Every structure is written in structure tokens, then in C-alpha cells.
Image (cartoon, rainbow, N blue to C red; front, side, top):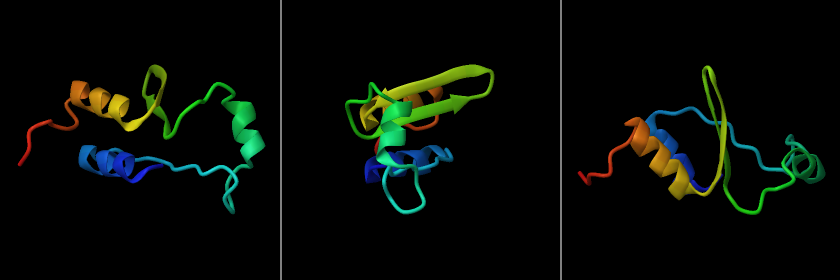
Amino acid sequence: MCGHAKELCRRADVEYTEIEPGAPGQMEKWEFQEKFPNIMGFPYIIISQEDQPDMQMVGVVEMAKFFLKKGLVSSKKK
């Protein structure tokens, strides 16, 4: 997960799990590609919410827009 995505999660007080396919202790790259065959970007983000289907997105901009819509972060500079 890129540093910007991590910082955005920190600001939104959202827990996350980072997966780096092929890294020691992580799933193999082929397993990741088999599970998510249509991924064409980084970071690939899956947001799980109670009583709702998982949301899948590529990139920090989409995640930031989602967090703004949910009121988890603000676009105002301090």
C-alpha cells in the first residue's frame, strides 16, 4: 500500500490490512493474480463495510473521494 493511502487511512481513523504479494509471509503473486485477475493498477483497495458488499477501487483519489463522502476526512487545510 502506498504511503499516501496509509496516511489517508490514518487521517480517517480506518484500520487497514496491507498485502504485498510475493513478500515474505504474504500470498504469492500468482495467488493474488488468480484471486484478483482484473487488477490493472496500484494501490488496489478493497473497502469492507458492515451489511454492504465490498467496494473495490484502484488508487488513492477514489479512496479519498469515498472518505470525503462518508465524512471521514475533510478537504479543508488546517
